[in-house]
Structure formats: structure tokens, C-alpha cells
Length: 190
View 1 (cartoon, rainbow, N blue to C red):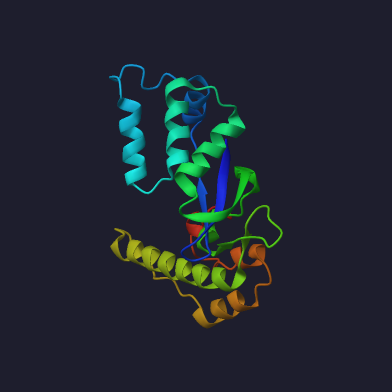
View 2: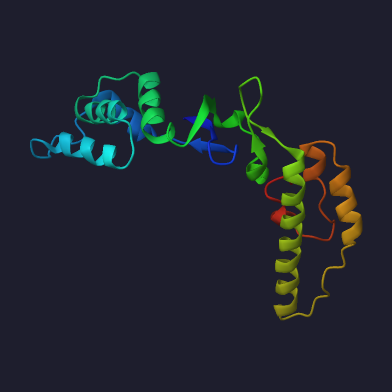
């Protein structure tokens, strides 16, 4: 499934809307509310408008749910207009494989030329630092509570901070991980 990727109005970060295949199928075939009483569609439109959805988007969504008839591209457009437009701008339809590594999800920013988001290293560095500190804290707690006594981690934090600052790209930043720390906590990089 493709994702609707957009820049948030609130902070300039990236959000990802993941429509389900079920939603796309229903908008193609319709009949989702076939068992509902007459007027149910109008009630749904009114409720959506009351939640701040533009009337046109609410009408198109309800019509698609009732009678279908949309192509996949049209279904994505209806979902975008109903669920995302009020939250952001600069929409892209991307495959999951085109998205950057989720480990630095809060550092995703839009590319100036469109396309997949990029990872802003200035925002990613503190994320890596916090994740390392949190992972070390969790591991030290586990070691302290272990039945067999284990020494706490001995990490050279100034060296780690320096390595994070020197990282020139996302791959280098993701490799900043102490050897003695469990690799499972590294968010899928290892």
C-alpha cells in the first residue's frame, strides 16, 4: 500500500497517512453502509462537516462508501482531502520503501524539490543521544535486577556525544552505538 505523506502546518514536520486496502476496496465497490437506514449518508456528511472536514470532501467520501466507483488514485485523493488537508500541505503519494528510517521519524523534513522526506541531521542528533541514554538506562536497570549479578554499562558519554556531533549522515549517526550495549535496542539498524 502507498502512503500519503505531507508536511504538517503545525511544526513543519512530516506526517504519514496509511489508508488500508479495505478502505480503498470499499471506495471502489461501495455498499459499506447498505444495511443502514435511509438518510444515514446525510447524517455522516453533517458529522464530518461538524468535525471540520470540507463539505466537498465529506460528500465525496460518503458517496464512495455508499456506491463506490472510484479508481485507486481517486480513493487516495478522497482520503487525502478528507483526512489530511486540514492538517498539512505538500502531499506526496509514496511507497513505504521510499520513506527514511523510522528511527529518526521526528527528524523527517520535506525535500525542497518534493519526493520522499529527508532526515534533518540537526534534529536527528539529539534523538540518537536520547535513545542511547534511554537504552543504557534500561539495560543498567535490567542488569541491576538480574539474578546473576552483572556490572553496569561503562560508557564513555563524552566520546559518544562527540561521535554524534561528527556524524556526517544518517548512516554514520545510526552506527553511533556502544559495543557493550545490546544491539536489539538500536532500532533496527543492526
